[in-house]
Figure (cartoon, rainbow, N blue to C red):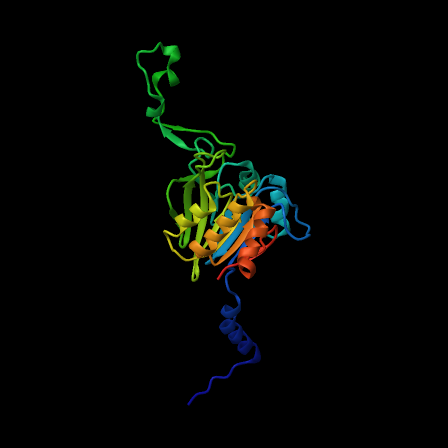
Length: 296
């Protein structure tokens, strides 16, 4: 019987080939790139939100913060390569979530950006019929001299952006879903907001921007995909909310919606952090600037 002999170098190569996949696992995490709180670091704290989701070999940027220069600085210090993105999701039109698009599109102008339907803000389109042409009017009162284009495309501050408007729950990548909900709250009435849900073996990881429609409502929408909610991370929009209402929201997520963990940030408020920390205890993940929220 012929025996196979290995040199020392060949044996090392063989061992590395066999064992490398055990150690080279893909990241499963949410990294907070922009927020106004967190432990001391060289990162710049500012009001706003941005996070990078890495899961199943995919990288999705969620929101871009309040200031393009600060966003650029934090991204650089965290070693994030914005040219290696599979998609971007913008939660809503407010500047503390969109301003970093200026920097993003300088380094990655071709990336697809998913947004909620927000009128003319994200380069939306409308049929020419919405102008309701009136042929009997004098020529100088006719739009486009009475010959409007078939579709009217609005402008945007980010002309280079490849925006795709999402109006219903959409799977943008395998296991990555963009949810859309509409606010019915005073001050943000009828604002559409997008959230991101990622499938994990223990349920959905839900990333929210500001939760203007209500964090409970967003989680209920996510539960239509999978009733198991592993975590909710991001802004819960509880600033100026009475403590009793915050307590009711925390109880609802904990008891009614059976959310396993929370990682509140941004507009949740310090009062909100205190209430959720007390309710979820060791199932509360600190998610300030630079934090990494592990996913299963």
